[in-house]
Length: 170
Image (cartoon, rainbow, N blue to C red; front, side, top):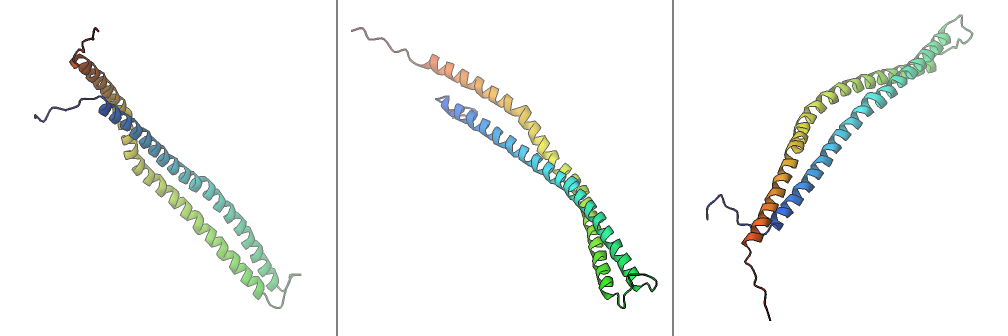
């Protein structure tokens, strides 16, 4: 048998392939939507939610540090009404507030770094996904139309090739 011939005696094989192609297209499009949705959600979470959270935290912790610093200064100032014999507790509180403020600064810088990184990485990832989506947009409708035409022609061929069944005249 020549290699360029197909031995198809029923259009059902092509109809089944057409059905599976449509299902593949739907599944692929859902995956593409999921990928782009996940990227958007993570990017929005980082750039909006986390950035705002750590900016507010930094402001709050800076205020706490300044208050603790003032309390320490007042506790050791001989002219202050808040003077104490020992400002050890105030010094500990000030150091703790300073560490918490520094931690918030590091977290905010990390969020900004991750925002830039996720933007760059997502662009690299979305590029091929968009190419694949474009390929689906361009090729799937054409393939389905060709399969429909093939099914129609095969059905016509099978109708013409079917032997006429004589009617029995009893």
